[in-house]
Length: 64
Image 1 (cartoon, rainbow, N blue to C red):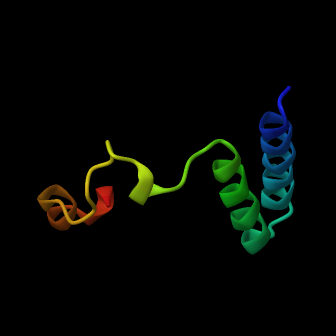
Image 2: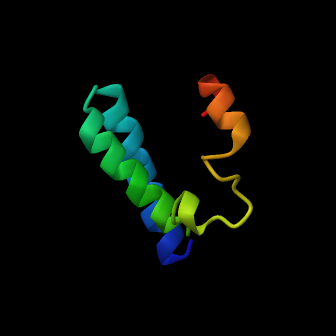
C-alpha cells in the first residue's frame, strides 16, 4: 500500500473504534482525517456537488 492508503486505513480503523466506543468528537476528527487522506476536501472542493442553498433544499429540509 502507498503511504496515503496506509494512513487512510489507520484513521478509518480509528474512526470506527471511536464510533463504537461512543466518542463522538474523536470519531469526527478521525473521520475528517480519513476523508483528507482520501483526497476529499469537503463540499467546497467538490465541483459536482449541488449548492446547499438550492431551492430543493430550502423547500424540503429533510434532504438538506
